Image (tube, rainbow, N blue to C red; front, side, top):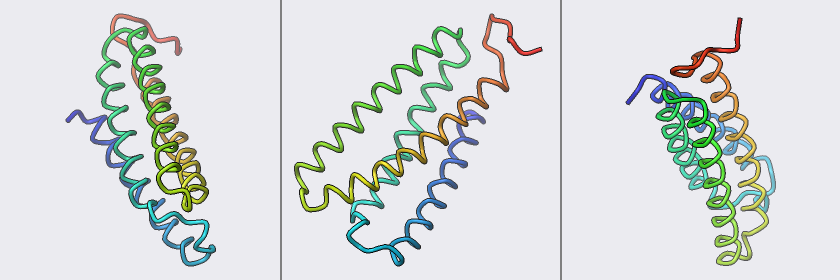
Length: 137
């Protein structure tokens, strides 16, 4: 595994543990109706999706910028369709838990999306693409 990917995996794992500890604390503070029993599985789901998409992005990063942008758009679209499919299937199967699940899913979506964007921006700023000049002075 490349150093960027292993660094990202470690940081993503730290984020997942921090979010897990925070959600555990909120489990005892908030009403239980707001917390879905599927929350631990959501952490695994988001960790896996984020890591897989980053691996694809890291592989395309050594190519030209057009390749990187195409892979970024593709991974974002695939993740979006996957997320919507998971939401719809879970809501149809577990109607009683649909609202807490959607709330937990959306909060984790925001947390992981912000993290991913920050990591991708730092990746693109720290390096230049092969065969192209960087726009930074």
